[in-house]
Image (cartoon, rainbow, N blue to C red; front, side, top):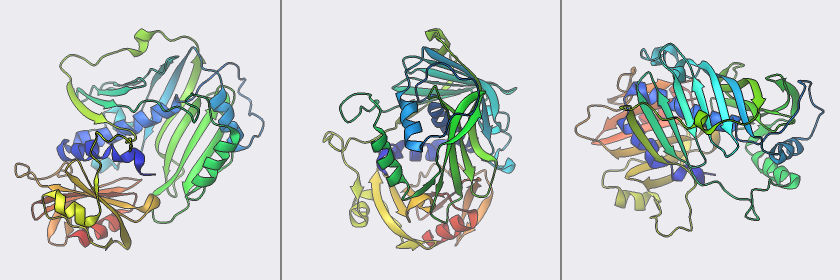
Length: 399
């Protein structure tokens, strides 16, 4: 289950090292919007729909029918992005950007998998553009464009794009049910369309993540809303919802737009699933002894932190990643040799927190906590879907 993240680790920790706080906060929201935007337009669509609730269906059947729907000529929609993730004190004067304050906007999708989301605000628009191989996000408030290289689309078991059978979907849902409480397909309406909704919630204690909810068009197959909720909250921490939608051809010029000349470019590199059979790429160093021998600095990796046992240690891209616990309540710590030219990390403008003889800085959100500090020439970043008190205890166990 960690496969999709292995290849992505280097660009994540590189950004944690280099981005100033304001842009780091905006980028977290940007990535969330890219993921949400991809989900809202990821499935196929067709014709029809009168806004009445659809007939009940088993969840596996509803998913299969959505995946089997014929592809549309294009999608045009109005959307609303909600961001309640960051506390107001963490925004540092950045609330004007739509990525941090939320905004309304428009969405377009072509028949060949290209798309665009435009979010509008007085501080400047945000443009999210993607194809099957790349995505970019332009934030006018900082005149910055973030670029991502996406993994190649995967084929089905028979080397085709055919959707899985209902039985296969049921098997996947059963396996997911070992870690998640998954609801059935609830008939509802969304954006004036007949729709189904489903909710998944971690069935393990200790995480701030409460649930994720997806609603999709019952006849078209198009997701109409995706939201993430903190535990105990009925309001979303993050949500992207379609409020109006129509189907028809979308000109290529609508989605083929470029950021302004002179915009700062942040290349996030590639994100995707690492091909374990590709012998041309070095495999990560794993295991505490091997990592300590190869890291080039003194690796700190206690047996347990905040009551969670150490479950994984690996060296990726010059950074050590240590995982404690499993599931949604796990805590991840990255370590790297500190840069002598830097006096602090990307969270240095945020409130300080005492950590057993050193001072760290902390970002708290509805869904988790990030703490950074430096000690003995090593820079640490700790993150988890845990309350600030748990994160601080874990950080002190490291120091």
